Length: 255
Image 1 (cartoon, rainbow, N blue to C red):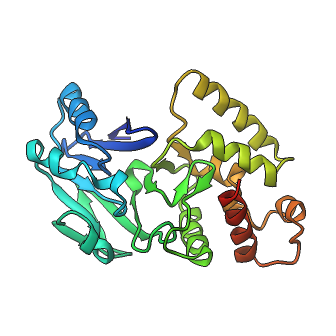
Image 2: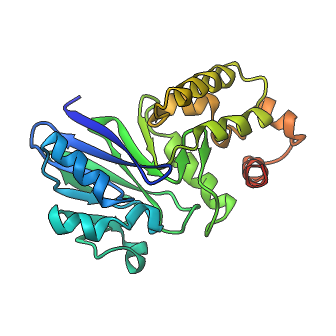
């Protein structure tokens, strides 16, 4: 894969990501929780920032933009629907749109639910999708603006990507997500095993992000509302997938 991917811990539990196209040298930063940590990483790697891709408007994903671009000017990409509450955009994007990063396509998915106007950036050549607070490792974002139906529709879009896709989500929430997931999917051997691995990783102060879509499909309850075991656990054998998803989200909110 002609790309370098770097995960940058920021703030208390955020992640930003750097994606570098080895052929062109183009460097994209996905979300800007803070400037200092990211600027230091760029200096360490001796990379020149060319792109900033913003997934949604929440402060912990954009608040470092002004300070960072003062020293690292870059083209800023974000959702057209969110442009009124994002830093000034050079490219305002809509679902289905494709733009070039180096010589490679970047596809835009509307993954509203956590917010309305949240987008994901999918780079097929890198086999990577940047989902921020939509699909997360063993979870999905809280529904601050959208509905459960919107978020489930967003999850289904992401589920259609190739299973080997690397999922770069925005927070280190995986350990708490695993504890919750086991309450609704307690007999899932893959989930039990993953939960143990996550506990060890966090004990060793290692990040649990990114993950892979195949692993999320096996273990993430927010992608599994059709699973008979989860439905039985919830007593919702005859419900729709949307209803089951909504119940899982509601239970997570009060977990």
